[in-house]
Image 1 (tube, rainbow, N blue to C red):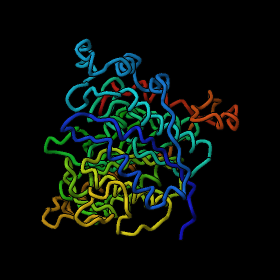
Image 2: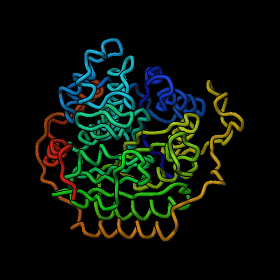
Image 3: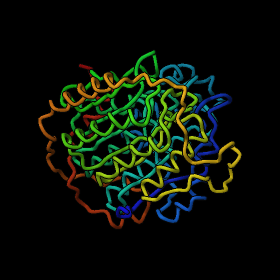
Image 4: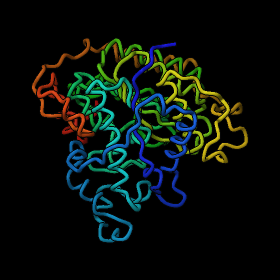
Length: 420
């Protein structure tokens, strides 16, 4: 068995009590279901479990605009009629509704991702997990795709205080457009997204030809896929692309977004991955042995979300789990089989032919070959990092080998990049 990793895990039961509204596919309740399985499989005994700190406005404004965060703080279902202009400006409405506790909700899930980055920066852990994070569609001053605050961008900015190069990998069925956009013009962050593309599928971005701009040219990697992709097909393109990315970019930290809407049977998705196949991507990435922040994301068949994130928590811990689910508080959700793993849909056609996948892979690898080696970064003294608790203050060095030059450019240019 592989060496035991030092893993930390962030969860707050309060997150599962928030509700986007009747009929909305995003259900934070899935976080309580996943956490309950983690508890009942006894995985919590093998890692450090923390309640995330509540992110401050200043922290969120490291990427988002002040007026946008101020709007999120002030708007409620009771006063929503007073904010008609802002609702339109910040695209808050149908997909991203105003609900009770919205501001607190975004601060908690964002705090968990920042905390995970701090733990990794301090060398306290090898892997940090925040299943409530991974909201990859939010823009600098715009809610999008059920996402309000982009915790991923904020966590990457925190990692950039210590790490010259951060790799972002996204296996949600939707393109990670908010993260790509934030870092489209910098070579400090490489974004790699595997997603459905075409048929007017949200968000409509992520063509293989979108590769970054200016200093960030070739540092955005997009792998557009079609309906029905299976574990075997996904593996055939995921592993060679990630291997080439690691070789070319040589990251010193990784952020992995594990949206489960790429699983078979998802309410909004159309892929045919099993829990084991999805988890194999996590296993493959963690095998490189780099500090890794593991985040959640999409996932709209909530029993399968819980299954997958429990399985992937076990992957991080190098633990094998019994396929029979243990008794848990949500046992009735898992009828009729009460199993951890999923079976693929045998009647779903895989529209990703071998020829198509080989063609996409060839284009992606050709783009990566255009890189002139991993970018080097000048070392500079940095201001103190963000802290998740008082204990970290005592161990915080006064100076950091931090190449921050590209980080400010990354989020200042975030929304107004020119695509080439």
